[in-house]
Image (cartoon, rainbow, N blue to C red; front, top):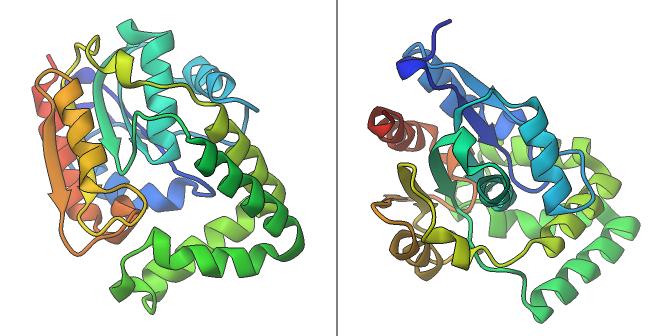
Length: 237
């Protein structure tokens, strides 16, 4: 299948997520003859290693959309290989490093996961998705299944990679490719101010908010996210 404008799109999942979090978006974009790939973020102990692993398997030139942890990885990829990235979408994510309090909370979650991972996932679910989707099997059960398949060890490894990420705010001004920022309007983990910071930092970046949506916008509301990504792809020369 030929890629629109010849540029493939690489989608990067968030914490404990896999290709299922992007499935609706991928299906919508591929219906428009877009070449779409979902990256695997199960390798790498640090964000730098994770990004290097993704780059080693990616096309020579591509657009990238990163959700949450995938956004951290996308920014690290920009740092490592800016010439290869033709377009950037940052989805429900941040350029900020972890705070001391944030790292401490992640360590507590890692310890809890060793004892009661399923219980931890249930506690995190209301923070990950919009309240209206908690009883929606097409969303909530998919999140549970992805987390179960990632497992407590995968959860811990990804959390430690997240903690290792650097401050990407100084990088934003050097980004020259077309860029968009997408966020769920009711995202409890990434408030609007964090997304506004990304838009201010990246020259020409456009903000797309998705109403009635929490932290996992591509899963919760795939069509508006796909529409935002189409606008990005159309801006790539």
